[in-house]
Image (tube, rainbow, N blue to C red):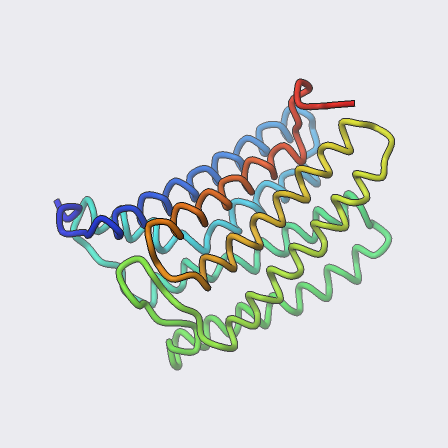
Length: 240
C-alpha cells in the first residue's frame, strides 16, 4: 500500500484535505435534504450545490490521496488540474442564482447574465489552457500541491471576492431584520464566507507545514459548519 511511501506531512495534507471535502459535501447534502423537506428546491438546492462545488478546488488533492494511497496510482497532471478548477465557476453561478432568488429578484436577470459571461470566459480559459499550455492553468508542484497560473489566479481572486461581497450583503440584510433567528443566521453566514475567503487565501499563500495545514483546514471546516447554520439554525443556538 502506497500510504507507507508518503511522508507524515503528505499524509496530514491528504487526510485534512479529504476531511474538509467530505464535510463540505455532507453539509451540501444536508441542505438538499432540508430543501426537499421544506419544498424550497428553487433556491436552496443551488445553495447546496454552490458549497459542494466550492470544495472542488480540493477534489484533485483528495482524489490523488485516495488513488495513490490505496492503488499506488498518480493522477495525470491535466486531470488533477481539471477537476480542481472546472467546477468552481459553476459554484459561483449556483450561488449568484440563489442570492438573486432570495434577496434581489429584481436584478436577477442582469446579475446572472453578467456572471454567466464571466464564468464562461473562466471555463473557456481553463479548457484552452489545459490543451494549449497547461502552465497557463497551473502546475502540480508535488503529489498533493498545485499552483495556479497568473491569469487563472485573477479569475479565482475575482471569484472569491464575489462570493465574499454577495455573502456579506446577504448576511447584513439578514442581521437587520427583527427576527432573532434570522439575525443569527446572518451572523453565521457572514462568518462562513469570511472563513472561506480567509481559508482559501491562506491555503495558497502560507508555506506548507503541519501547523499551517491544520490552521487552514480548521478555518475551512468552520466555514462549512457556519454555512449550514446560516440557513438551518438549531433553535437552541438562538439567543434573543
